[in-house]
Length: 297
Image 1 (cartoon, rainbow, N blue to C red):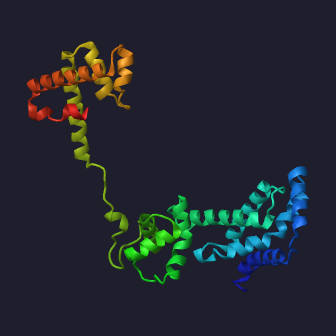
Image 2: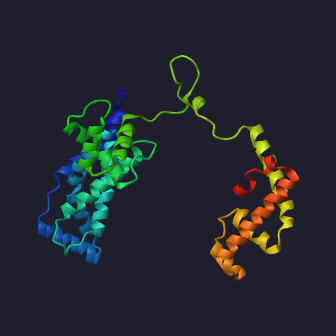
Image 3: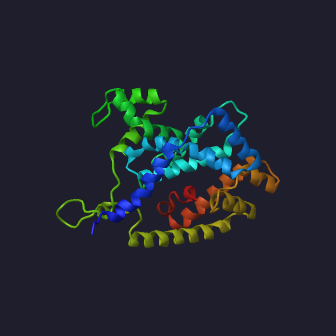
C-alpha cells in the first residue's frame, strides 16, 4: 500500500482549488463596480461570490510572498480570504479606486497579522514600528550589504533612518529574528539532565524569608497602631489616608475639602503628626528599630 496516498489525497483538493482560482477571469472596472454595488445596495450574495472569486488569484499571489516564514501555505491563503471578504464588506463603489487595489491592502494586512501571531509562541510585533521591522529588516540589511551576524552602530543607524524607526527597535528586532523558540524543558547539552528551566532565577523570597517578612510586617503594624494613640482624631485621619491607605494615597487637596481646610494646612498637620508619631515610636522601641518605618508608610 502506498503510504503517501492519504497525504496525496489531502493535497489534491488544495491543488484543485488553486488551479480553479488561477483560471478565474479577471474583471473589468465596470464589472467590479456593478458587482460591488449589487452587494452593497442589495446584499446580493451571488454578486459577492463572483467579486471575491475573481480575485482569489490575488490572494494566492500575496500569500506566496509570505511562504518564507515557514507557515502552511493553505493557512496563509485562508487568512488572505478573510482579508478579501473584509475588503468586499468595506469597499465603497463610489470612490475612484479599483476593488483589486483596495483588496490587496486588506489581504496583505490579514496575512501579516497571521504571520505575526504564529511565527513564534512569543508575540513578535505589536506596534507599527515592530511590524515594519519584522517584515523589512532582512530585506533592508541585504540591500545595504549588511550580511554579518552582528550589526554595527552605523548600520543600525542607517536602517533606522531608512525604515523611520528607533535604533533601539532595530536592535531589539534583530536579536529577536536571530533567536529561535526554545523549550524550557529542553536539555542544555547532550550530556546530563540539566534543562534551561533549572537555571531560571526564582524572584520570590525563600520560604523562611517570607515568614520573617510577614512576621516583621505584622509587628510593625502593631507598633504604628499603638503609637497612633498619641495623635488627635484629625491627625489620625490624615495619616491613615496619606500613609496607611492600601490604595492610592488621598491628595492634600481632597483631604482639605473633606476637612474644610486648605491643602497647605493639611500638609502642615501631616508633617506635625509624622513628627509626633516618630517620637512616640522611638521613645518606645528605639531609633534603630523604627528607622524608615514612617517614610515607608
